[in-house]
Length: 335
Image (cartoon, rainbow, N blue to C red):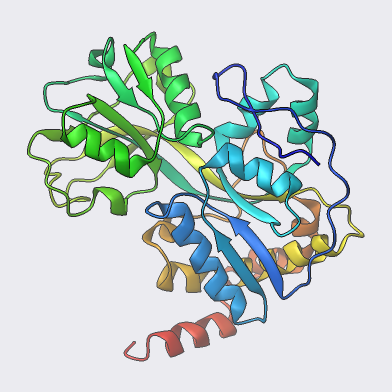
């Protein structure tokens, strides 16, 4: 099977054609994979949190870095060693809007496991740039080709009617180096704060650009990066956000991976409190029961957690399991 590289016409993201995949081979319950994001981003940390949790139940989840959301959709669609992925919520809509029948067929096979957290749009820019409109005619880095950051940045420019003089693709670490060297004027980075890439850097001539354009606000939720999120950030910064989504391929109900994915979902749902206590700070902002427009929860997940959800609704005070409490206590014996 040819390597699948998704593309989205509306956002000028580069994708290549692929033939319809064969039915994914069953994966052993104890050996699964999740594609995440860059090594300095929040996705990969969330992936490691999930892997650490499910390992306690005998499931070994291999955590893979990636170039971003579009590649993650491709990997979940075609790789036999990957059953889970984390993507931005606007990626699926962009694929559906491509006008390409084959891509629409791919989108139909992607299922939500759980909505996760808001991912804030960080635009780090030279202090001479005061507003998003000032990026007109500037050189802006928008992340790696195929990444959710590149897709969303392109949409932001389209919605706000802004045309940079040059758009650069590439690794965020390289973009930060170019920005600090004044080779580029600004860079996009989309991830749940705090972002380790921006922690501990010297930014006397740089700042986070406030994003308030209402044309963008019609399509994205507003958010705020609180003051002090980064040591060099003295004031809160208005911005927009997309939702991170834990997703999977829509395996048939009789497929082994239906059971595998359902098992992972059940462990996460049963131990949300453990993740909030022991995982990345973004777990505090996760509501596993939240609805997400444009996304359908995977039936294998809905079936796997049905009894837990019912119990939680009937006994909200018992939503945190005894097993979860014991794990938290053992992991934090001083508490």
